[in-house]
Amino acid sequence: MTVIVSDLTYVRVRQKWHYICVLVDLYNREIIGYSSGPNKTAELVQRAFSTVPYNLTRLKLFHTDRGSEFKNHLIDKALDTFGIKRSLSNKGTPYDNAVAEATFKTIKTELINGRVFEHQKELDLELFDYVNWYNKIRIHGSLGYLSPQEYKLSNL
Image 1 (cartoon, rainbow, N blue to C red):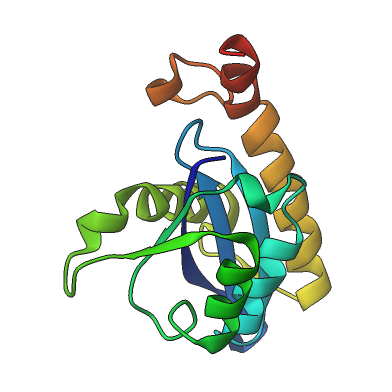
Image 2: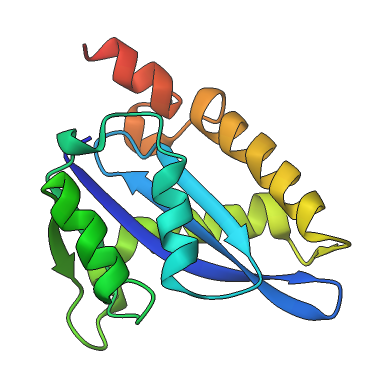
């Protein structure tokens, strides 16, 4: 809960693109916040922050790419409210946000995998289940083959 990274990806809901936003704790790769919806906006990012079950004043740094959904007045105000500093990737350098990109590669492989969701509600429910599984059960090689929550508990 010191540095979190974030990004958005797209998923098909019927005939339209919808978006998923995740907030990932760099310490243990835990998805601490998430949201999905039909619009790629700052409100989607703000909703992801609203799902974080921890005290946001503990966060020190929020790192993202330079997308307008992250770099805007609404997100600036939220970060200022909780005393969180912003870090932005350099232009044209996706490796600066490698953990968020890798998390989405995993989500696309394990959850989305070419699926077309029938409704936003279906996507929301599937994402909720996936995040719980990802955080509590799925092992990560970078964490010594522990789940994010197991890793956090083993290092208290």
